[in-house]
Amino acid sequence: MYDLELQKGVTLGFIFKYNSSKKLFLQKEVYLSKEDTTYEGQQLLDQLATYGKDRAWLKKQSKKVVEQYILGTWFRNGSSRYSLKNLGDMKIEYNKLIEE
Image (cartoon, rainbow, N blue to C red; front, side, top):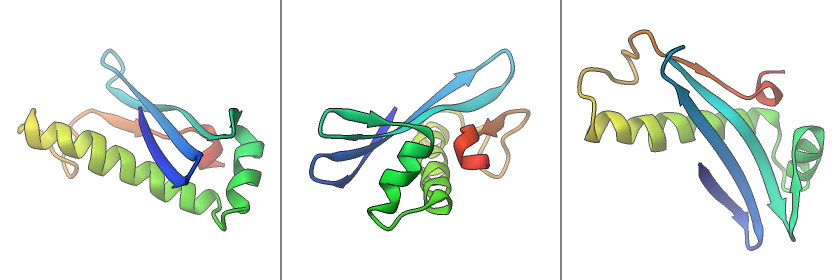
């Protein structure tokens, strides 16, 4: 899980999960929390638009979170056998909202 603060009281959340049997790093959820309300799907995109952000920006942020903050840290501090350029059999799958 990774949270990105867009502004005070507005957080964009990313939840990723690794499925070892499928060798798949999956973005399970992406959501925006604002004033005790959580937005997903089209409502999330509508809320992002109020901050001048769109689906392309969201995809770029998702990629940054998984590559730099999660896998980048994992490869630097753990598995030296693999890297972002050599994921081996592992695949990264992003949330359907981002891939549309």
